[in-house]
Image (cartoon, one colour):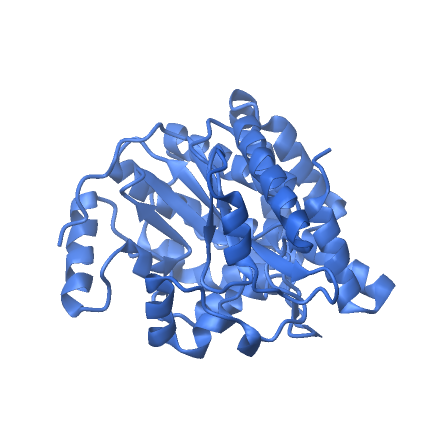
Length: 374
């Protein structure tokens, strides 16, 4: 089976997907209300879509094609308003965050959809443990080879995206010590990790054909890579982010990815090679475990610096591209996070230090997500 043609898309267009927690407003545990939420939203015209996820305590929103930060934020805002209205009718809460702080995986229900039931049969209890919540960003590429070049160049910034979005310090009632514990659940899947080092679509089709021949995969959906090409959309999809606590943060991270994409596609600053991945899993782990204070090894120079230093250095380098995309304001807000305000994992830990009660932490993070946009 061939992957087919890489669909044309507008270069540097973006799309944002967010997986959300559905929580009870009584005890703030997860609540299996996705079918009811979807029924309330049936027929409502939205700029994107709201769809089920693998368990009934999750829901996913996705924008349409966005030209940039302002467009993405506007679309997210409209979908956010519709979701909050539906949730209030059901007397449930919605929340960001990469993990729920104290839910137990065994209590989750698989959503009644053929693909989800198939995954449950294949992966067993891992499917319910996959009740974790992420942000995905699609980046438009003018052609297939540019998509693969962009994918491998942007892979060196995966630790940036993890540290900026990290919002999953708690798992099943315990502080894990990680900024992003969510990605530990993703690691368990056999087809997670990184894409193979191929730089032409012809070579990628050969790789995909070999994987098809093994019977292990049937489509690109079977790969849980950190970044994967999506030929049917003409994009690459960045998949490592935790769902932020606000749609403002989600839109800012999407703007960062778009700005990096513009720099990479216009200046072509790197020559990707297999050796770039020598430090990939080390850098990725450091971001998950320590956030901005993690150690980052430059894949080209082997220089060591903190992730904070590398993100700040990159944001400064991107300023002209951010201005061209009208994303400079969004990136300045990320700069403030890195420079001292901290990420969402820090916010959650500070809330727990104050309250000493995880249901109250979830109540506050739900209130934060459901509040009107400023």
